[in-house]
Length: 240
Image (cartoon, rainbow, N blue to C red; front, side, top):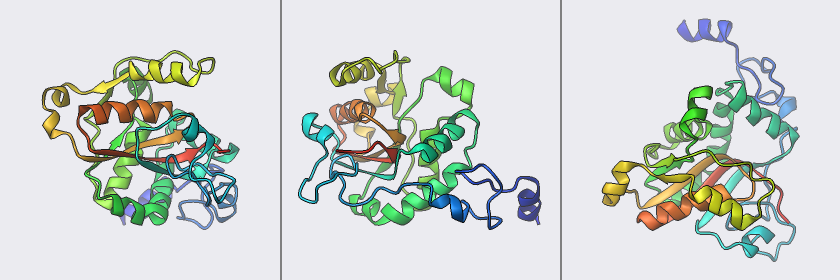
C-alpha cells in the first residue's frame, strides 16, 4: 500500500524527457530510450571511449596521455540527451534518474565488474561547498546504487576534495592534471592508515571528458598503496 501511495504522489519521471514515464512505473520512456547513445564496440581498452578502428586498442587521448588506471567502461556517449539528463540530476535534484542509469550499467557491465573482483566502489568527491549547495554528490549517489545492486562496498570516505579548481577550458592536458592533483587527496584516516586502503578499486563518476579527474584520483589511490584502479562512468565523450 505504501508503494502504491508513493507512486501516486511521486510518479516516476523519465530521465530523458522529464515527464511521467510511459508505460507508467518504467524507469524510462520507451521512445526516449532511443535518444540515448550507448557506447558500442570497438571502444578503447583503457578509458572505454568509442573508437573508429577495429584494429586499434586505445583511443587517441589514451595513446597521447598514458593512464594510471588499468581499464574503464562507460554506458553512454555524451550526447545532448545525456547532457540534459545528467545536468538535471546535479542541478535539479533529480537523483532518481540514477536508478535507471545504475540498473543499465549493471545489466551491461555486471560481468565485467565481477571479473575485476573489486574491493570497493569509490566515488569521485565534490568540494564540501558544492555538496552543501546541492545536498549530495552525484557520483556517490550512483556508487551507492551500484553497490546495492552488486554488493560491492561503496567507500565514499577514502577520497576528499581539498579545494575547488579554476575553470579548465583554457588549460592544456598537463595543466589540467596538475590543477586537479592539488584538488584531491586522501582522507586523514587513510593517510595515517594506508594499510586499510582497498586493493582493487573501481572509481565511479557521472561523466568522463578529458580523463584528467580520473587520472588525478587514480594516481592518488595508487601512490597510497592500492593495487589497481579501474574506472566506470555513465557518459563519456566521443573518441577518435
